[in-house]
Length: 76
Image 1 (cartoon, rainbow, N blue to C red):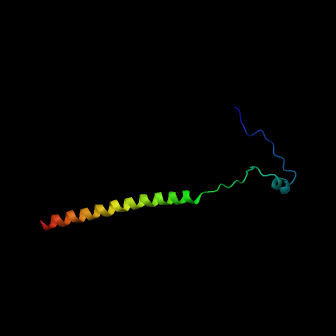
Image 2 (cartoon, rainbow, N blue to C red; image 1 turned 180 degrees about the horizontal axis):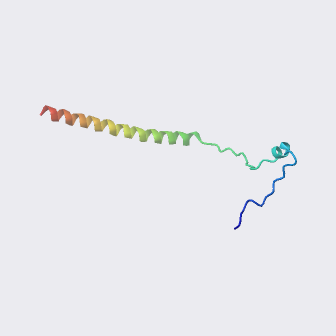
């Protein structure tokens, strides 16, 4: 059997120095900020709002037709 990952020996005779760890981070990332155009954000918001408005219109029209049909049914 091969036990990978267990070959490393840990030496705890010395206290680790946090300054050495703090000087060199593990992951180096360049902080690049992307600029977003306000018109693109407005277009996205308008598309979402239009989708919600169309759903609301469909629901309102459905209930108006349903109430009208129920009203006609009970009057007959």
